[in-house]
Length: 204
Image (tube, rainbow, N blue to C red):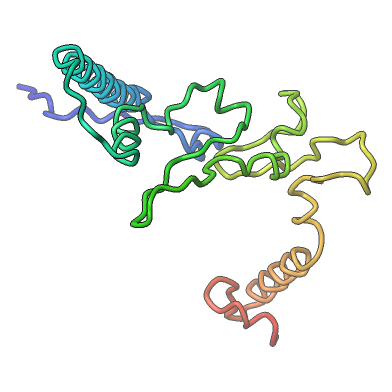
């Protein structure tokens, strides 16, 4: 009599690329649940803000003759409490890099400080220099772009020359030669290891 095991173990034969795929086994539905949770939170917050606005309007309409003196600071605080968080500005307004101000409360009164006006002074990111998807590949996981995004431009005018220029110049070449030297010493029988004792190859 054969009894099947409780667990089913699946074996996968992966190639060289599959074994090194950083997203291997990732389930995209897990992040979909995160998005749903944030959407539910935003919807609940939106309903709460509408309810607060409705109550304030009803109070004003029910007592039009009564005028309550409220300081300018308290009015601004009430307005800030009813406004949607400035981090959730419409996407089209976020993309134009316009000046966005946010109230900064202090003991001496409210003041304004600029939150998002730094982008206009920043340099263009390397993955936006050339939008052709068939040209220089950008890996967002490691923030690396090996090739030159603008190969036709003048070398003196290039803002970014690709990550390969750092791999094939300066002390990077010396480090590669030191690794090769350590491997050759190890093959000859000497106990030399670059990762265990990085200073050993320098003295051999």
